[in-house]
Figure 1 (cartoon, rainbow, N blue to C red):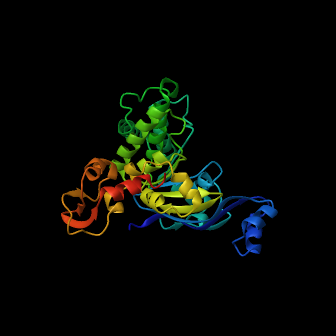
Figure 2: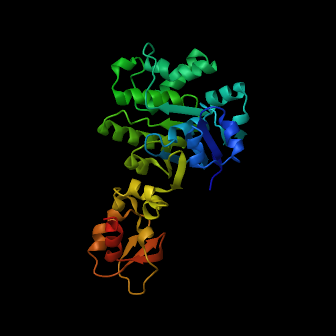
Length: 336
């Protein structure tokens, strides 16, 4: 596995009077009853997670689950009450204000649900703004901004003002502005949730295209499991400030760690999510025909379900297992 770009260890964020003293008095791990009795709001509780270089980690949960607060702790937009946060090998909580400013200017990109564009600045000027803050000269920052405008699919719109753009185009400007500093880590907090369904799908496609080109380390917040499945390498499901389970979408579906995770994922289309090798049995001597173990079940379901016997599962030219119509049927309909 690649090296972690962001590491959180036992991170807490409690809102209330002197939460550090309260945590210390309870050995750093107060239970829910103690937190409630003392009148604290536990936004994040004992969160531990690594974000690997180049991966898209999606944080999910209902409103108030703590996902946005955890990301704000990761970027130190708010101060964690306790715990360790390592950003690209640096102790982020120990960074001075000057160091923090430099990290944000050069290593972090942030995109939020609300576009927060400057209405009196053109698209070019909005995208170039972070470079202006860095002190990059006008010619260089405009040249870089024009490259980014093309990258996010807004070629020819550099002289437009935000009011002249659609919601999806405005969000592209926000994404472009966050990319201007060429960040190592990209934080996105429900960036597409204000868009209608069709534009949202287009923005997801655009996001995946950008990621295939840029290979950023990304923490992406959403409450939409279908969006998470499309975008995530791994998903962390949060509840009441706690990371309830962390894993790939397949792992969350096939092996939910709690009733909450099971309920959260129960309506997901298993055929579109599960791969053949997830369902296969050991190799069988009487297998006839074959399917690729790496593909999604949905793409070969017709072939498997219409086969009278057992099929070989093959990966990279080698037989790795077998599969039957009965296995597929049980897997796809066991939730019902």
